Amino acid sequence: VQQLVICGGLLPANGDGDRIKAALREINVELPPLCESIVVQVMPGFGEPSNACLPQLQFHSSLFQFQSSNFKRVGNPCGFKLGPMDILGHSGQPVKDLLRCAQLEPMEALEMCLKARHLAPTAPDTLPTQPFEESDPFVMDAVPHLLFSGGHSKAETKWCDAGEQRGTQCICVPAFAKHHAVVLVNLQNPREVRIEDFGS
Image 1 (cartoon, one colour):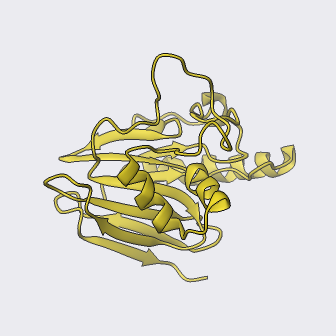
Image 2 (cartoon, helix red, strand yellow):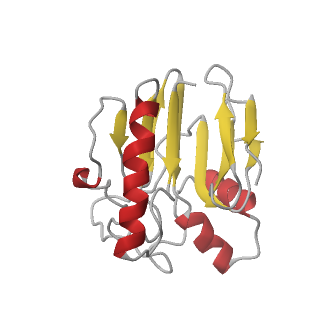
């Protein structure tokens, strides 16, 4: 494993101060040893201590009592390159808003976003976003190798034809509290995906 992306759910959503403090104490114990061996990226999600509108800003550095070059605080949505792969995703709010507006399954909604080349098709009508005048930050300028959405009730993966010479691996990442699993992707071949289930 080269890198771990935590796409939302790191801290209690809309939690009171005591719950957030308790979660931070645990995070500040558990994450430093992990960061000694792999890169860990953390994204804010719905109700977590960041701005409410998309795009969400990265978590403030004062929340974490450790420093590591392998620990990356990133925004939501987040796009990056890892080896030969272009990776793009969010913590789940755009897909969940699509489900509220249409009778779709999470994977169907994520695939619709890919085909539309837009991360948040319902924004800003029913999904709060910051105002933008010059350009739309949710438009996909290029088709990613991997498109993910976090915070779902279960893990799902699907290889989708993106209308290019190559396809895109779409992944609905489970909220760990709902489905104790991580999704592992082969960086050399994104078709190869494994769901590592840790049980209930």
